[in-house]
Image (cartoon, rainbow, N blue to C red; front, top):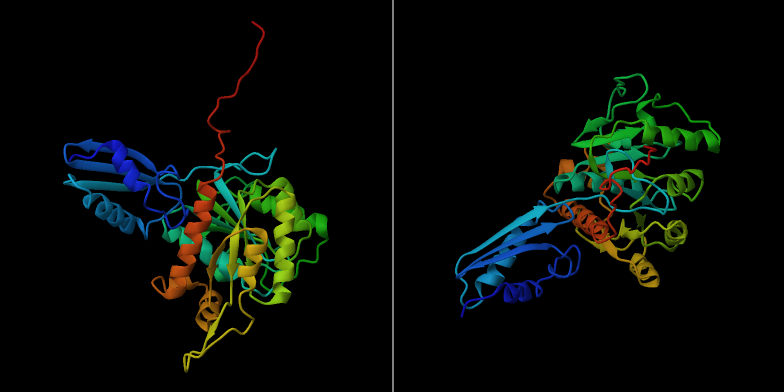
Length: 362
């Protein structure tokens, strides 16, 4: 009995995309199905970068369809199409940037900047074009984590070129000042500096711009949420109650300004002794999961308290660069895919599709 296009789609609807947590049909990822006798060809187009799992998806679909009666040769192609998505009402997208992801924590010391750096590198590893904006004017750290040296260049005397390393376009106040120079500025100067770093940098066709926010919910966070088109926010916390208090404040701030929450990343979830392998929940257990349950959001991943993650970030070669096949890198990649998939399921931005209409007297 030969299969029909409809029966093939019904079979595809039984397979769930691990990133979107929806089946391939419902998520709109099945772009074409062709049935020619007993040969079946399927085209899957994902809205998020997924280079490390594309072959797994092809294999899963091939096995599923190949087991159907009357099906001979199965051909599956998996492609990616990352598009721009809408942001806060009234804000236009930035030139050369499709999506902006804010990484926040509310509280300092929870590993937010390390997570942001590895998130950017994970998206690159999955096949995306990525930029990193260090929004911490007082305490910039991305220039060190991303292994940046020297000063950025300017080709026109008005704008600056992003610095690039490990495949990520980066900009930080840290590459414009001496390493021990303090930024003794009041709020208005800080927010102006942030806007200049963002808008005067010649970003080159980014799929995602990661914005590493400073701790708290102050001037920089308000400027970002009110003047910058943020596609989604990712909250980093530890399981500790004292960290979760501030993480909840950060979450509520984004909710008030209509920025979607992509999910929570629990950092320092568990410590594994490097000598004996003993596992211990130093900062508590289940805190992020409870927060996700309280606010009906997703727990995107849980990362261990690992000395290697810290050492790698301090060396300018974060985990995704130093140990791309390690267990921590796999967690970062899964977080990146899930966050990008959340964006892919949001409303698209069509502002650049329609031509400008000019009314003239004739």
